Image (cartoon, rainbow, N blue to C red):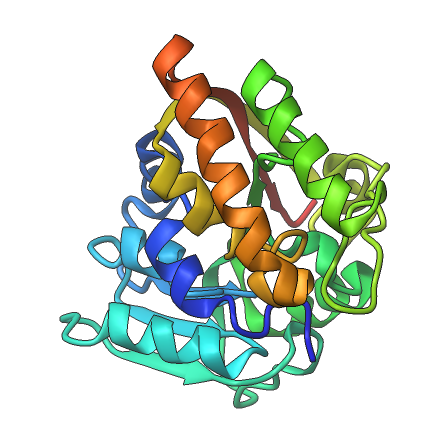
Length: 259
């Protein structure tokens, strides 16, 4: 069982999308390019390709989880640009020898990858002026507000103090800044953008979000999910009535090109 088994429908329905400012930033990078091929690695349910579909001329979606890829296929069906779906690891994606991506995106997935392998392999499958964008934000586990702290404590009561990463793994926090990793790659010209965002949640969207994650997916609770969910809903309803379920977060976009 992978860390995201059973989560795909919840992921498609409840994960926050890509901020408009991030989409605009990437679109500006493609401005003036006649040929604009997007390679999205660790695509999940296809949020990034969907957001950038109006900018690109071709799209390749790489996702190892078949359930996630099925949701991406649904989301991207009917687009006016060619979309190719690849059910494989980012580390193993092997396009035709002539393939060259103009924009590579990795959103909320870089920490799961063998980063040096991915970056090294990208050198041979990207255009000379290609941009690689590594993007992401925190989670409701890492958010620090009264309601997220209370929710995290409740999850820990059921699943233990350490953050989970699927059925049999603990989450290994990534300590090294992505800009440092990218600066040592073939794409050594790095710039970083941090976007401040505010999200307003509801009890329903928080529960759906939790079930989309590797740290609070329904199977992790086993039979106790029937006890956990009513308690989580009551906790969230109480905080929503008192002050709202507001999250202040930062969305990071690290762009890099060949040095």
